Image 1: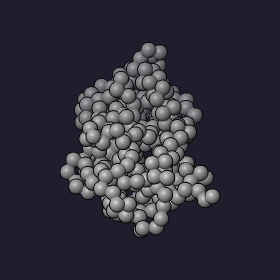
Image 2: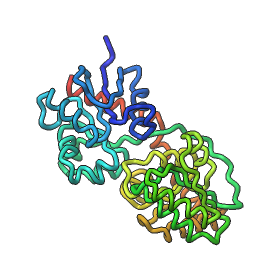
Image 3: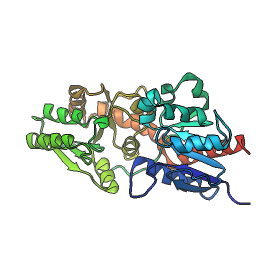
Image 4: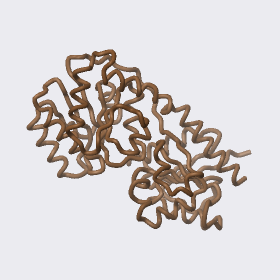
Amino acid sequence: MPSPRVLIISPSASAAANNGNWHTAWRWSQMLHPAFDATIARHWNGDPFDVMLALHARRSADSIARWAQAHGASNNAPALGVVLTGTDLYRDIQTDAAAQASLRYASQLVVLQECGAQALPVELRPKTRVIFQSTAAQAALPKPFDALRVVMVGHLRDEKSPQTLMQAARILKGHADVLIEHIGDALEPDLGAQASACMADCPQYRWLGGLAHLEALQKIAQAHVLVHTSRMEGGAHVILEAVCSGTPVLASHIPGNVGMLGADYGGYFALGDAQQLADLLLRCRVELGHPHGLYKQLSQQCALRAPLFSPATEQAAVRALVNDLLHANP
């Protein structure tokens, strides 16, 4: 008997795109093999599949609507799962009619962190589940205590609020033992200009531009802390990469980050509050070798979250999703 056919829709489904949606689509296709025959495509062209998983409610809206129409469904279309991103949850579903329709058409909705369902209408939450993304655990690297090494990874664009890190670097200008590396291409030229100016003014701040993924992972593993300043997130992969590398996180207090790190996590700062971020960095530096200091506390809390982000956990959850969609539509 042939394996059930699963279509994974990702609007940017190409290895050349090298973005989060592509990596999720590719990873899930590998996790479904060999129990399922998984195909990745940008759009559904009408070919027969047993299950469709669509990444991004707004960008995949055309394929989602055509699948629902082909199955004669105005709500809860058979064998249709929709995976929601941060822009879906915290922007598009508030105003975009096509994204709102995608929520109705799906028979299963997937969010990528624990707080995601709270952004959905109450009546849709019963058909919503959490699937954490994953990465392989990395061996923790030795980290000297002569300085606090800080890294931020993310392209320079407004949604990531990179200005918060730059402002914190300026506040910490007199602290030569807090070393900051900022990784990411300037998708908005003005932010690149701001990063260059900050680097000229603050010797301990270095903007490295875009790096290959493996090189960025090495920078994360070498750092004492990862800083994540975003305005909105569906479940930032860089957070779980840091956690699984033994590098604790300082993150903006937004739902997407709280859903990854937990409500009781001790490393949050208010969105856009550069002074609070600078204070946390200084506290980590002062207490770097202290057995009961903030840095140790954050390291322990991240270690407790790490099992949520294991490949085996994600694979089991993805296969359970597909099996449930098949069972609802034999």
